[in-house]
Length: 199
Image (cartoon, rainbow, N blue to C red; front, side, top):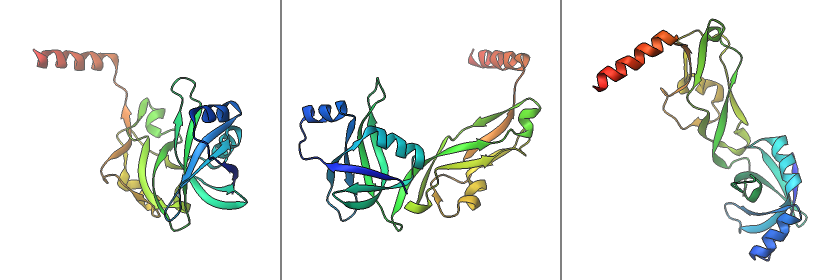
């Protein structure tokens, strides 16, 4: 398990937060059930390394005052211009803690439909799930290699592969569909139908 070393913060002035960032650190908080919220600081470089190692929903060990807590990264704020991380929220968890999380959907392979001129249209790029902290996947992979034109993968189709999670979407929601690519003539005909119907 990746470890992140933190220091407690007791000064909350804006100037102090600015100095922390200038020193390569980030202000943060850690909270959870039955614990007091603590204000901390962490090294920016260490956080970025841990995020690369464990992914968006991974569990890490946060070391504070010689004690370790298992935490998850729950939220962070970016500077709208520089995209620099300005503040981080950590949630303390254990193996029994159920978490709501957003998990990225990754399409794997090139479908049979694409090989004959079709296109993979992905409608859901993230799924909202609920699972115990240890069961949250870094991402949800969908293998579309055998999918022909006209084939759709719906939420119900992947539930058996992720049975340790509750996927908080309707079963009939389409995640990805292999569609055919319209010719320029078909697109022109569709456009003319829209114009006529609008008259």
